[in-house]
Every structure is written in C-alpha cells, then in structure tokens.
Length: 87
Image (cartoon, rainbow, N blue to C red; front, side):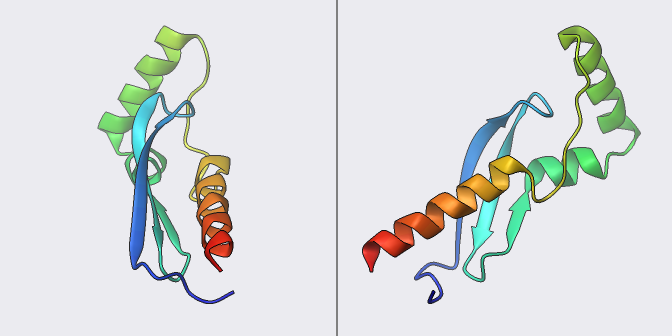
C-alpha cells in the first residue's frame, strides 16, 4: 500500500481503560500516538493517584494497556480501510 495523502490525522475518543477522553494520532508513516498512554502509562504520582481514585469509584481496575491497544489499532485499521477504498 502507498503512503496516505495526509501527514497526521487524529480522533478524540472515550477510553474506558482509563475512564477519560484521549486523543489518538496516526501519522502518514502509520506510526501512532495516544495521549492516554503518555498520561497514564508513564504515570507520575498525580496520574497514579487519579487512576487509583477512579478505580475505587468505578469498582474496577483502570490502567492503560499500551500504545498498541485495541482502540489505537482499530482507528489505524479504519483509516487504512478508508484509504484502500479511495484507490
């Protein structure tokens, strides 16, 4: 497949893994970035306390599953499918 016509595209979604909205970016080289990963996986003490409090309130364990989670890969696949449909 050829490279997409765009440099970067992004979407803001609700991520139930961290109970917050996150922005998922897909770059023209198909690399990805998720703001939730940068905020919660590499969590400092403030973010860790926030996740712990949210987990307690919701009654389930919260935590980022990493930069290649299902939400990120599904968005990238959706973009690739759209690009393939243009051809």
